[in-house]
Length: 190
Image (cartoon, rainbow, N blue to C red):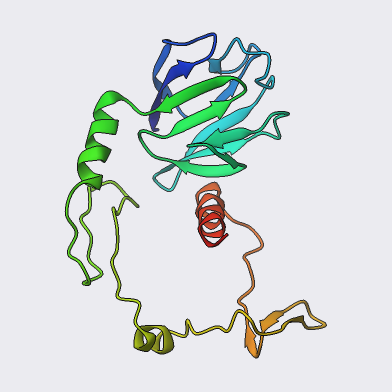
């Protein structure tokens, strides 16, 4: 079972540290939440933090005022040490000092440019960067040459086409980690 640490950076509870909480936890203003905040803008049960496939996942529980990670509104997101979570008027820092320092060291580590190889921390799913040369040949060889200006159509069975290319269907059911990764891809593309 994973444990998580949060420090309150802003809000009425500023300075409080919630150390090594066993997941899953809920964040909210009402009794029954493991991480309870005295903030009227925080929903009674605002967000959930859980472990899935080695990732720590934050899920907004349809809160009134929403949840932000590093300033961006989110429904579901993978958390990394150093992320800032905004709930109501409160800001929480995710991770212990050691976890944040390790991530900063990892992010500043050099990668082998152009090889597609990245440094790895040993933690699952924690690659710092993968550098692939995005040449016209690479795009064509890997089927990435979709013409986004082409007409978008939907067939009778619901398949979406861009030009003559059918988009693969989305999975019907995903784990929280898979949903968080897909949300990150959509945010990146948006």
